[in-house]
Length: 254
Image (cartoon, rainbow, N blue to C red; front, side):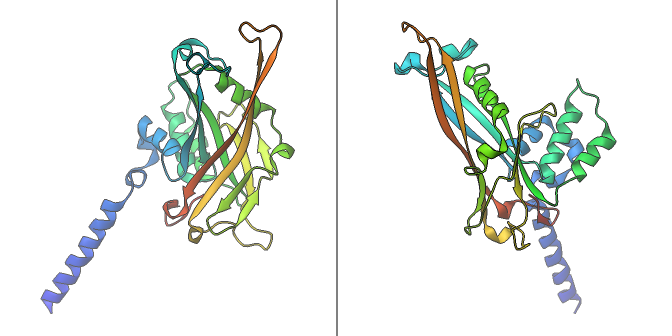
């Protein structure tokens, strides 16, 4: 009997050890101890945050007229505009944003206020935030995309901006906030519940996809061509998230 009890205890211990080994890095230590690299990983390469890249070729190499670059971008064959997408209503993302504030030596971190930010969520909306960067830095198209985001309004987006699940459900944008002083980027609001009161998304839906469109317009004088020209392109900005991996503290966190 003692042997059976010993084996059962050993099996339970092994199972617990397996769970600990399987824990993701964001579950192994409090967010107040995350490094700057871990913060960036959570925002850009995690179940809740990813990056969509748009590549623009340099006309110097392609022979076509395209968007200008400034600084080091003039010498690059390709220029990448990076759209950082993450669910602001997901607690791990708010933890990363709070930790980033703590690590910012130029900012005065109010611990109590950051804790409130991490704890808050929305019972009504799913909110996805979008911020911009580029490789190399300083290319004009990044400024162009930012200008486009600042000019957008909710009515312009309600027909082409949505969240869709692998099981076929879809909800459209109900509110858009352009980038503001909070540094969190543009915010896209979607209903958390269907019209019949059921949650729009569950783990059983498998995957969720965000999709929107952004038009970049640049006016200028073409080299060797008199007068003004307008250069325009529309990009589909999208990203897919695996709902099965978006479980945090025992529940779907989105």
